[in-house]
Length: 516
Ligand code: NAP
Image (tube, rainbow, N blue to C red; front, side):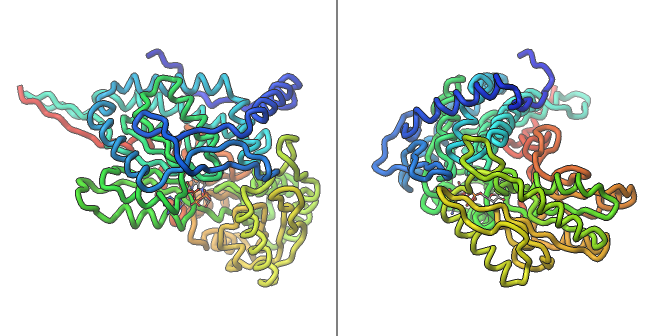
């Protein structure tokens, strides 16, 4: 296979009228197809189910973007068995180059239909154009990057020579990987975990998030169009609470690749650790979980720039990114001035239906909105000062972008993941205190520092304990291959998606020695 070096997929320039027009056409096309249904895919066959999952537009919950079949426990069990059979009998022997080619072809197809996939996320997850476009670009990156990584890791690996023997080391696939993604990067994270498992020679049982099944169904169609054998992937939407334990606890499940909340991740960790009757291996898990990410701004920073970066990080995709800036820690001398600058910017943010490309769309569903409103109540009770926002808006699951100042490091909105457009601004006595506050949660996903003090930047490089640390920029938007992604502590297993170690998690190494 001739392979040009990896390059990140460029983002669409929406200031270009031609691109705007093309995107509007894609939005219209997706809207025309509202209500389309996708069946499950189990053992290479489409499977009809009595129950359905209906995927709604969060900004207009009466609109049904599409429906998918809904698996029950019996179907989940069948899917794992079928995946195991196909793995054992056929897929594990597929040439790694052929598997890599499927990913490259899928990337090609996705690039051709880029706006259509992005437009789907505008309606299904309420991403604005820019956020949806970035999600699709990241999915293309995962396909391109992992295809190249497999070319590097396929075939025999380097070992030291030994006289009189031919020694080889090969990375071999491990079995059935259950993929459980979140809804917030419904294309990028879902596809990234799925294709990492497939390109390494494993079969997949994919259970998409219940609020993001349509984009996943479309992606599965694309993989099949690119030539993936139908039996290599089982598509089983279903309620995590209902089918999750069957998939995770199944004795034929070899690995679980999960991204989502801490609560569910820890539950999976526990269940996967329990050996089931007939189980022949220790299950592997990738568990990428939540965050309480912080940006420190000190008195040497350019405050206008710092306010811009904080606001982008806090409110992009309504604050529903695991990497979102949910805590802004500011040293005392510039605290009041920075709060004011943040509020000035938040005042200008526009909330609306994402098809009109506002700054913020709706939050994912009513339950999430209710949780955010609860946190706003906790914040008021804790004596935090509501600077702006805090109210629900009509028409969909809309919440005003919200800023709280006078937040103390151990207040609830400074410790727990709100996962919405709510920013907690905390005052630090000095830089030492800022570091302490930064590290003072159970999480350790992303974070950053904006400072012009070299010594502080060097200290922060060592002492700020997160998986993805950024200096003098926003703390969201990790790029595949450039900033491998994964968190410390209760943010997860630090698998570093989009990095050079990632595919190894889906394989085991086999050493073969032949004496001459
Ligand atoms: P979630 O509620 O934990 O759900 C994630 C997935 O787990 C969904 O597919 C869900 O299915 C499934 N699930 C629910 N209960 C389950 C169970 N008992 N067994 C197995 N699977 C189960 O998380 P979310 O609301 O989708 O996503 C938001 C969270 O993800 C946030 O905490 C965010 O920080 C985190 N996140 C982390 C990263 C990272 O890289 N660290 C990236 C993105 C998001 P249903 O939809 O059917 O419930």
